Image 1 (tube, each protein chain N blue to C red):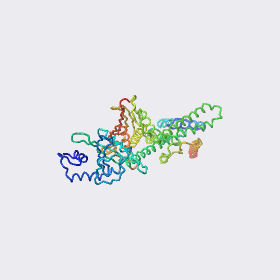
Image 2 (cartoon, each protein chain N blue to C red; image 1 turned 135 degrees about the vertical axis):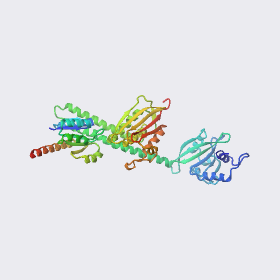
Image 3 (cartoon, one colour; image 1 turned 180 degrees about the vertical axis):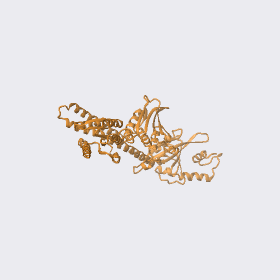
Image 4 (tube, each protein chain N blue to C red; image 1 turned 60 degrees about the vertical axis):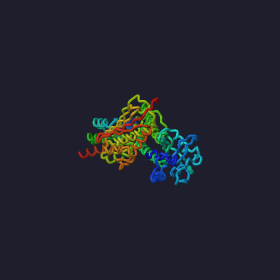
Amino acid sequence: MAQILVVEDDRPFADALASTLRLEGHSVLIAVTAYEGVQLGITHCPDVVIADWMLKHQLHGGDVCERIRIAWPNTKTIIISGYPDVMPQVDRWSEGTETIIEKPFHKERIIEAVNQALSRTTDLAANTATED
Amino acid sequence: MGHSTLFPIRLDEPAVKAGHAEPAAAEWHLFRQALDHSSDGVLITKQPSESAWPLVLYANPASNAFLGRVASDSASGLTNGVPPSLSLSSDSPLWKSLKESHQADGVFSSEVILHDEAGCKNILQLRSEPVYDDSRQLTHRIAILRDVTQQIHLEETVRQNERLACIGLLAAGIAHEINNPTGSALLAAETALAIMNSPQSSEQMVACLRNIVTSMDRCGRIVRTLLRYSREEPSERQACNINDVAEQSLELARPYAERHGAELRLDLEPDLPLAPMNPLEIELVLVNLIRNAVEAGRGDAVITIRTGPAQGGVQIAVSDNGCGMNKEQLAHVFDPLYTTRRQVGGSGLGMSIAYGIVQKHQGRMEVQSQLGSGTTVTIDLPVPAGL
C-alpha cells in the first residue's frame, strides 16, 4: 500500500480516480488546486503524485510535481492530461516524470503506471541499501 | 448656375428654355461620357403623376445591362420615358424598388435580388436620391445601381470562415473538455464493476453511479453547446438578457483561456433591460474579444467581462491587463486584414467582423487601449423604447 496524492481540478474525475486507487489498497489524498497540491505534497511526502497537467491558473501539473520533488526527491510523479496537444510540452518538461497518460484511460493503465513507479522507488531503496 | 441644378433639368427637357444658360458643349459631352462609361448603372426617373410607374428619362449603358436589355441606343442614352412594359415586366423587383423610391422623401436605398436566365441570383444595390428643381420641388430621382453580388458573397464567405475559425477554436477546447467527464465515467464504471459483488459496496456503488450520471450529463451539455454553434445561425433577433449572453460566451471561451493561463472574471449588473439581438452573433463577438484579450496577455492575463446600462441601451465591455496597443495599431483596429499576428495564423478579420455584427445591431463599438497596461472594448447595444 502506498500513499498517493491526486492533484486534479476536475472534482468528479479526482473522485473516480481516487476510488480506483483505493480499491487497489492505496491511501489517496485529493488536491483540487495546484497550490493545495503543493501544500499537501510537501506536508505528506506521498510515494506517488498523479497530477493533471492543465490546472486552473498559473501552475501546471509539472510545476506542482517539481515543487514536491524538491522537498521529497524520491516521490514519483505521473502526469495525466485531457489535452493531447499539450503532450509535447509535457514531454519537454518530463524530466523526473514516470509516465504521461492521456485521458480518458482505463483503470489498468493507471494501476500499471502506479505499480511501475512504486517498483522504481523500491529499486532505488534497494540500490541505496546495497551501496550502504 | 451650379451644375447640380443644371444637369437634371436639361435631361428632362433637352430643349433649352429661355432664361437658362446654354451649357458649354464640352461640359455636356463630359457629363455624357462620364455617365456612359460608368460601371454603375445610372437611371434618372421622373416623379410619376398620372401613371403610377415612374418614367425612365435616362438610363446609362450599365443600367441597361442591369435592366436586362441590350444597350442598343447607348449613344443617345436617353430613353425618353420608356414605359415599364417595354423594359421589364412591372412585377420585376427592380421596378417595384424604383416605384417605392418615388414614394420616399429623401435618399432611398434597397437591395434588389434579380434572377438571370440561368437562374443565378444577382444582388443589386439601388440607391436613389431626390433631384430638386430651382424652386426646391422634387421632380426627379437619380438612381445608382451597383452589382454587389460578388461583394456580398465575399463578405458571406469571409464571415463564414471567421465563424468556422471561431468554432474550430471552441471545438478544440470543448472536445478536450469531454475527455475529463469521459475519463471520470470510465473509471467510475470500472470501479463499480469491480466492487459489484463485495458486500460493503452499496455506498461506494451509489457514488460511482452518481459520478457516471454527472459525467455523462456534462458530456451531453458540452456536445449540445458545440452543436448549437455549428448549426446555421438563425438571423432573427430576440430580446435577450446581455448577462446571459456574457455568461454563455465566458463558458465557450473558458477552456481556451484556461489553457493559456488566463483568468476570466464576470462583473454583471443585475436588472438590465432586454436588448434585441442575435445572441449567437453577439457571443461570437465576445468570444473573439476574449480570444484577443487572452492573446494580448503575458501569461497572467485577467480578463473581465462587465455589463451595465448605456444611454438608450445596455453595455458590455471586455477588459484585459495585457500588452495594450500603440496609436498605429489602435487606428487600424477595425481594418479588415490588419493583424499583428499573421505569423501565428491571425487573419485580421476578427475585429472587423465583430464591428460589422455590432453595426448590424445598430450598436456602437469602441476600443480604448494603453500600451503596456491593457485594452478595453466597449459595446453599446440599443434597447428600443417600449421593448
